[in-house]
Image 1 (cartoon, helix red, strand yellow):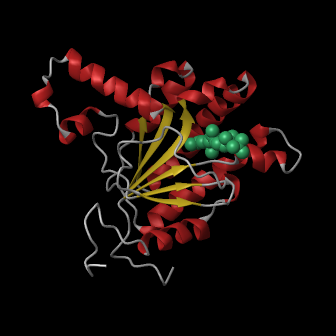
Image 2 (cartoon, helix red, strand yellow):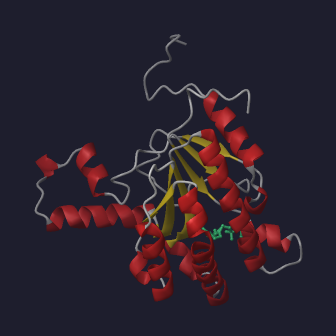
Length: 239
Ligand code: FPP
C-alpha cells in the first residue's frame, strides 16, 4: 500500500469477475459453490475500492450470454443476487456506497428487480463509491439500444459525435474506466464496455475470482500506475 501513488488512483475500475466455476470444480464442488464464494470477493473488492479512494467500481455480474448456462446455475445466481442485496444493502449504505445497474433488468425475475430497485433507491450522503452491477448486460446490446433510441428520437447523422453516443449508452452518468481487471487468466473482454474501455489499461490476473482480495486489487493498481498512458500521442518524455 505504501508504494501506491495516491495522486494517481483511477476514478473508475471495471472488473470481469471470472473463475468461479473452475474454483469450485478444483475443489470437487458444484459450480454454484464458486459463485457463493465469489460474493465474499465482491465484499472485499468494495471495501478495497473505498480504502484506495476509487470513486466508481463496476462489476460484470451477469452477461446477456449467461442465460445459456444450465437453468439451475442461472436460478442460483439470481437467488444469490437477491440474498446478497437483502443482506448487504444496509452495510453498503453505511459505507457510503451507492448502488447502480447497467443492463436490461426487465428480463430478470421479478424478485430480483424489486430487490435491485429497493437497494438502488438508498442514496448515502456523502457517497464514497458508486458500485455499478452489470446485469443482463453486454456491450453489443447496449450499443444497439443506443442506436435505436437515437433513431427513435429522430437524430440526424450530423447530430451524432462521441459525446452523443456516450450520452445514449447505459453508462451515460459514469466516467469511462481507466482500468479494467479480469481474473482467472483469460485475456479477453467478452462483450464488456467495448466503447467505454477504448483507452483503459487492462490488467489480467491469474487469480480465480473467489480468491481475489485486497492484495490482488493493489497489484492491479500498481500495474496501472506503471503504465505510460499516451492516448495515441507520445509520452511526456518523448520516448
Ligand atoms: C464468472 O465465473 C462469474 C459469473 C458469471 C458470475 C459472477 C457472480 C458472482 C461473483 C456472485 C454474485 C454477484 C453479486 C454481485 C452478488 P464463471 O462461472 O464463468 O467461472 P469459470 O470460467 O471458471 O466457469
